[in-house]
Length: 541
Image 1: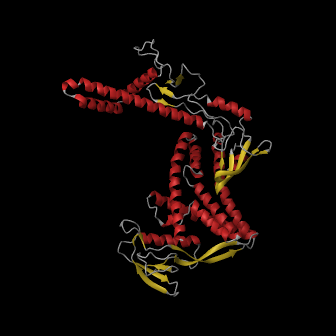
Image 2: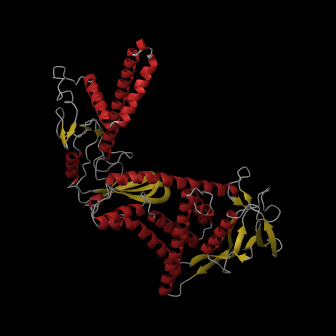
């Protein structure tokens, strides 16, 4: 992202390695090359340094004019300094671009508008309650009493929801009451006239023209519409051509794709380096079958039948793997299919397994009857009560015979890793959306906790080739995840850019931000789900 953006002279605010709290950082002036340390003058770590994030009061000054002045002081709108930071959690990193509007100001306006809406509704409810009490008192002489007042109040509320014209009258009456209470009501004005002056102190929008008699024209505030509804003025976007959001869809697409492309290139480079000048690319080798990696549950279907270290070779007479030396992906695919078969078995139906026993090294034919994972819930997924894993045999070291051979092997490895990773992640997301979070695919995925645990295990081997292979795998995983068409990720942002390319119109930026916020919730669910799986795996071990 960073290299692509700077090659187009697009402003970049921060380049960060890792996430979380900042450990160390510096700033570099892109014009002079001068490097400086410490916080920016008048700026703390918690504050955003993007354009237009100045604090603002309830009647905010014109952000466009105010920011223009600030940008002129900074040098014709060009970002002079870029932050380079090292952060505490070593999981990926990010590039931050300046915003193209004053987010702080817009947030304050939204808050003020919502407060005004709530105030109007509160006054409306008070007026309805008074109306109900008055009608109740008037009906007391006829025996209606409080019951009549209650019915009148309910009827008034119902009319307000079903009658738009009545809603408008209620809002305008509430605003008039509020104006009187705030001493903005001019008692000397002709209040009985339909064109009375009680609304003169409020910002009013009439046929797209903002009228405000008591505020300066340049100030931005909430808008009271003719029907009494409350809105905010249109966002005033900065016109700086060096902001990412102001570039054409082609350049934005290149910047978005930069991260995914670089991750793939990094993985290829790591593999190519190991094949040519390194110690060789390590590739795990597997025998056919699924390894029983845990002792069976004491009260499970496999208790007394299977043992840790046994290998399931065939299911109902069909080999789990078609190859005698399958790849890691084929091994995992065979296990997933095995588990899927267990899940779809009819209750009471036996599975016939051919098992290579760990103690005798002989093949035994056994029948196992799957049972619900949760004995108290007959509808829970069926299980045979053991954990399964690939039948790992060892590792082989691959060296390239030529540069062309290295390119071929590295390309195949990257392609297979990318496609298999994408297949696993997409399958998991699909099962998660269907409410099947206990699927076998999900058990093979790891979140941040699992990645850190796996990384520490690899580093502890002191094997440089293994560490480089792990780095390549992580880089491919990052590429696949960022390419997913989810709004909060690069792939989702690319969808918006491509939609602009096809239609010739930008997708509304605030709509994009709303969709991104909703997508973050889904990503948090996925992260939480994988974290639970990571913890359970560590606990079992």
